[in-house]
Image (cartoon, rainbow, N blue to C red; front, side, top):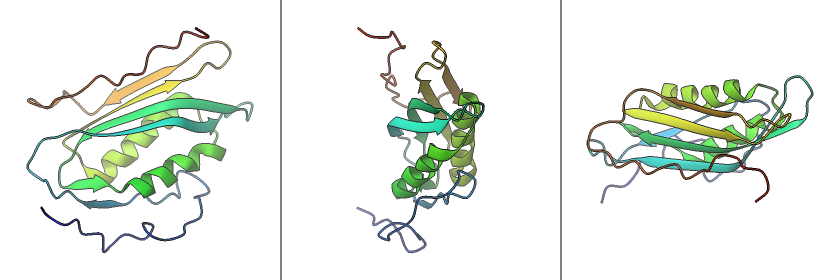
Length: 154
């Protein structure tokens, strides 16, 4: 089994303050020790928060990120801090969702990535945002994201 090189990481194993904004958050990567093998990595953030850019009220989402790595993996602590940086950031649902996906794509250059952002209702209307970099690579097992459409209480 190959050992992952973590020598260039600045946040893992260190006490790090939450970034002030998504733009200043540092996303880090580690080499994929299984490069050449197609598999899916899934991150689920069921308690994502940001702010409405118009009212400043909190918005909540359940975000699922799936990707097929190339040479790199996203380091999970840096991803957690990056997502946390949205907590005081005002942006529309679509902007938050696509920004998250594109930052990860920019960092990793994965073979494939998709994001499902399942936002809880604002003004009585839930907004779900989906984006992917292209067709699912052949031969990849991709489970359903498992987040049901919002139905209110019961």
